[in-house]
Length: 137
Image 1 (cartoon, one colour):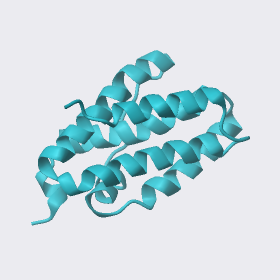
Image 2: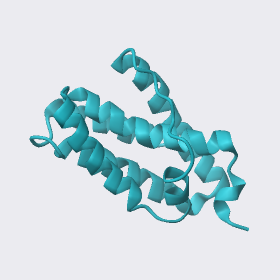
Image 3: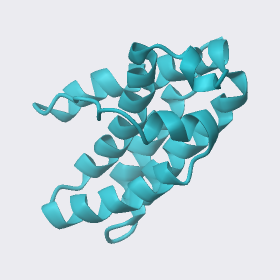
């Protein structure tokens, strides 16, 4: 049996919401359409370079629907999704926890660095994402 089949549709969506949402959070720190396009392309490469179940989840099915009203609203959805995604993987596919964490952080880093280098605000957001990826003991 393939490992990702053990995840429910809701669990798969949680993993995607966290990963894609992390990129949105970093991209929203520095406004501008050109920046957003460059950041999205950079981040999508990191997501596509993932492997195993993480790649299967992140590269298939529908994209998550994220709030659009405010950065705070997006953050209130994405950061808990990241924490929940790690918990889901610890329970159902522990060997993929590290891959997920690394892929999300790589995508966030690439999004931040894709347009005029990484700003202090982007670094701060990446640290918040990093914190959310650590499941409380």
